Image (tube, rainbow, N blue to C red; front, top):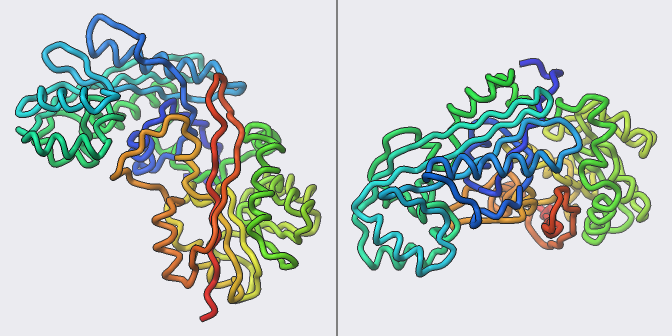
Amino acid sequence: MNPGAKRPRFVLASASPARLQTLRSAGVEPEVIVSGVDEDHVTAENPGELARVLATLKARAVVATLTEHATVLGCDSVLEIDGVAYGKPESPEVARERLRTMRGRSGILHTGHCLIDTAGKQELRELESTTVYFADLTDDEIDAYVATGEPLVVAGSFTVDGLGGPFVTGIEGDYHNVVGVSLPLVRRMLAEVGIPWPALWESPYFAYDEDEAAKYDETRGGPERARAAAEAVDSLLPKGGRVIELAVGTGIVAAELVALGNLVHGVDLSPAMLRHARVRLPGHVAAADAERLPFADRRCDAIVAVWLLHLLDDSEPVLAEVARVLRPDGVFITTTEKSEASRVADGRTPKDQRSQDSLALLVARAAQYGLVLDAATTFTGVNQSRGNHPDPLYPLVRFRRTLG
């Protein structure tokens, strides 16, 4: 792989945590934009075609909000039993009745896929179908499963990768398709528009060219979101110390922190981003890896990471490095649950796998390095899509370095 190559802008037009996690597990970190399509008022001649139509509507709705080229993937899943299409049940009563109908039987899980490449003006629509066999659930099992809430927010009222996994006795076809996105199919579709699957593995840190860096701020909420983030960070910062911002990017948040009276130094790996950061923070930025910081042990008062950890394959090396350079009683402030906060429609389940910035994961890992969670706040972002979706609310947490 060429670390200097431009990474395609790949957008997932779906609010599904399972689809996002499936792509992440395959090495792909998509940009998530929720379509806002009203699925309840869409009809088609059969369940498979319904899934394909819904996927197409989602992808087209997101494309309509874009101001720059991207490759957009829309997906939608529908369970078919006896020729009837089943989406999300939305109520415990419907979910309970549906699971009683499904038990001991099989159904076909259809997932529609629509890939739109705006630069090449190509739209591909495909359908993947997988047969799923269900266990003969007891009434008590059904009641307990419905009580978890998971069946209410997933197509067909079941999952294969969550609490519903033990109730699926067999699958004929693509496992990932049952989760909500067929990886082999998406690979073939991407190839048709000229994008090899490994191109999506390129690290976001090296993906920004000068054009992307120049427009980065305006496509990420601009000064309004940066100001809100800085004010939240400032509320958790000790006063009078030196602040290091990891993945400083263009320096837009760091500049707001300086305006609030903080002494800030920034590090980043992207030369294009650093060129912009040097304008905002002259003499206070450097090219450096967050896993190998150019600071001696126990020299820093505070370290900040805004929208970094969710991009990583493994956040532990960064946490270890943060613990190394922080003074005793120093603080590490970071955003958490970024991708989940960005979704308008959450749909999270009790067993949803989390990314590298999940709070539960961070608390456990940070504790191994003497970093203890001791404060938290939130700040409001800016809705980047059209429609009446609410602005996302981003969690921000503070870890304190123990005195040992």
